[in-house]
Amino acid sequence: QVWQAGKRQASRAFSLYANIDILRPYFDVEPAQVRARLLESMIPVKMVNFPQKIAGELYGPLMLVFTLVAILLHGMKTSDTIIREGTLMGTAIGTCFGYWLGVSSFIYFLAYLCNAQITMVQMLSLLGYGLFGHCITLFVTYNIHFHSLFYIFWLGVGGLSTLRMVAVLVSRTVGHTQRLILCGTLAALHMLFLLYLHFAYHKVVEGILDTLEGPNMPPFQRVARDIPVVSNALVNTTAKAAALTL
Amino acid sequence: RQFEGYDYSQQSGFFPPEMMQQQQPYMGQIYQPTQTYTPTSAQSFYGSSFEDEPPLLEELGINFDHIWQKTLTVLHPLKVADGSIMNETDLAGPMVFCLAFGATLLLAGKIQFGYVYGISAIGCVGMFCLLNLMSMTGVSFGCVASVLGYCLLPMILLSTFAIVFSLQGMMGIILTAGIIGWCSFSASKIFISALAMEGQQLLVAYPCALLYGVFALISVF
Image (tube, rainbow over all chains, first blue to last red; front, side, top):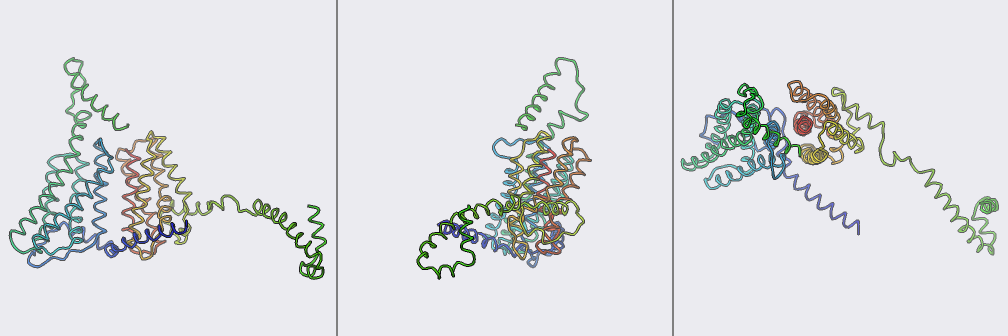
């Protein structure tokens, strides 16, 4: 009877494995191909008259999503973000995978409505490679905290990857209204996501930087009226540090 | 004991001729072999269970020489790995390394055993799925867990360093990046040689680097 139970478990595991096998052709890549596609994802194509080829590959996009998770985690740790319900890791993974899978499905649905020639795997691949721009921007701006630098990167790098995705989609859709709907939605969602990722974890950084270091901080004065400001900031940061260690 | 010895001396030679010769004591001899057999079998069984039993380490599958070989393979990143060393999946070494990693984190004041176990479990499952998808031959979960556990050894050096010095300066960043590169390079080298995936070392090294990067994140912050 134990053997029967074991056999049932093994067959269930085998069917699960067989399901994974469906994804096998999408992972057959060479490093040179991945590198080429990463660089291509930042170059908007000029020719929108005939359908552009999209590589239906899932290795690159999956690695980029995981890289984004790692960068988010690093940013959250450096800015001492405290997540009350849930964990840092769970939030980061949920945000990135939710964006990748959710927005891909939504745009695929819109593409179905607008008669665009694109499959689900291709959409996943396109959006995944579009996250390369996000990774670069966040990696730079989480370490160097200047608002103006972030805006330059947002428009420049984010804009380039969005333009590439938009150009590919435009080349595969017929009709002006459809093109406008599809590409407008994608561009808005992509740029807003980058904005959200930066600002969700940025405020805390600025707050701590202002109170702890920097030339803006006046030296400790023995005047009674300055003490409440400094002590409030100190109490806040110690409370945050205590909550983080708990 | 003496009785049995006496019986053996009486039944010197073979059983069948004696059984054929004497029909009437045949009944007795049926008894005697069984009588003498069971005590001797019990004794011999008892003897084999005590003396012939394999040594404890061998039974548990812990082979110190192999553990040492694999550790050396990890510690010399430029040494060519032998594909056959990963044939037996050995989880004793990785267990020790995980515990040592948790212990060094404890010495630095971070009680995060739960994070170490959780991340290593999820990371092993993820690498198992990815390697099964990317390789021609499949790979077993034990093999993946074993390799990833062995390549955690340089990370233990990093967290030992973090006990004494803070890793949040420029020096710490460079050291962390170097150790992550070392770990993922060794892991990908062993995976490539065990699964015969030439030309894809970078593709295997990158997910390993992400996984060890998360471990480094725990050590640094």
